[in-house]
Length: 172
Image (cartoon, rainbow, N blue to C red; front, side, top):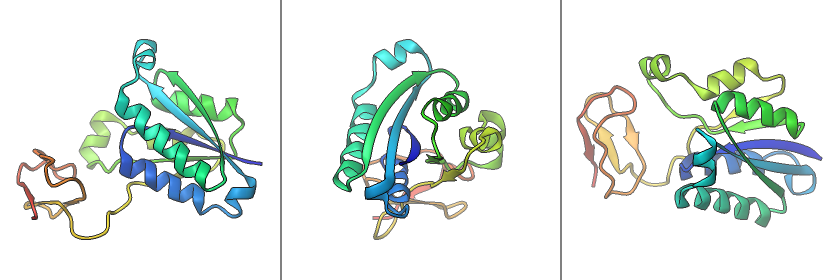
């Protein structure tokens, strides 16, 4: 079996992009096993998992299981990069499939990057998927830099994730 570690959060677009990456592995239904990993800030947070986090995990598990891929789940707490690397060792993952966030260079510098930390310290292949682009037109666009968002039209986006501008407008 080819074991893939898939750290997940509550962002549906990122998790679905990770699912697609795993589905597209050669002979996934026959040879791939996925371990879904939830990493929480602390043990108390892990014990009081929010419904959104559980829903994302259940959806991922259902999609992969429907594709014939064996799925295991685990959760831990602590620094996300460290926890992901420790879990990869624990399950002897052949690959890590991580959903990366789009951040500005300043945002990455200030807040750090889990993806970057995992990539630099991993001793196994790491795939970073980003988010799936939803079909159709974007729901919002930043008037300052042109960054597009694919979310519900009811969602309010006050600050652009790319440039930090406040001119994010609905496109409907």
